[in-house]
Length: 291
Image 1 (cartoon, helix red, strand yellow):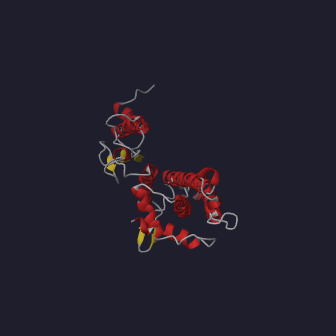
Image 2 (cartoon, rainbow, N blue to C red):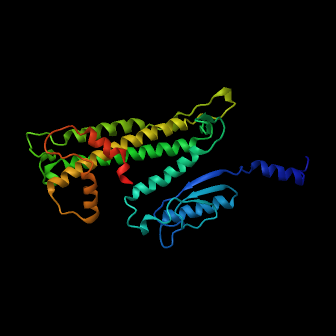
Image 3 (tube, rainbow, N blue to C red):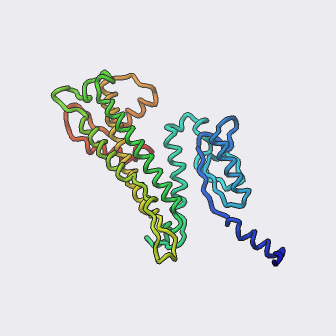
């Protein structure tokens, strides 16, 4: 039996070691990574990130700017929403942090790029399963958020809950009120649900096995973009309904709430009787008034 040489032993060891990976680690943006006081998720995120870096992997941590890490830090917020009452709703900031990671992955040019509008764009065709999965997760999250928004809209129309006129109509019984607005929201929610079918479960091998599976990351990104449009319309329906509820209730309202109602009054035509609401919903969804 031949005794292995030192060189052969080293080569065998190298062959069993995994190649360094480029990893995007997306942390919560509630507080720093690691947390200054408490936060089990933030602590586990830090330990995992540091461990991956120690094993030679190229890790980018998407976290708050005041985080401490040996990985590459990508921050779109200087601090977390636990430390800033103006960062509300917190779900929005978590979603935007995840969206930043997805957008960065979409901008990367890998194999099989597409040449669009004078520049190369990565298709993430072969190595984009993580990107497809992140897009799918965001679409599913939007579907859930839209369902909750539509449910709140429905509750606002219920006089047993609000004590306001049924369907928020000025003339209950004669007018349908904002029933059509809720039905618009229900239709948009249904559209998002159909988009929530994960693209990542449709991977398939091509080119007689010479290439990796097709991840359909572009399909996932396209579904996410469409879902965002539907979600904005659902949110617009809720804003329109809440505005009418506030008008019927009369107030007074807290300062920031009153600021929002004042802004909405410049976008929403008075609701004195049954009318079409499509133009109001589209103006709200356009979103330029948020800047």
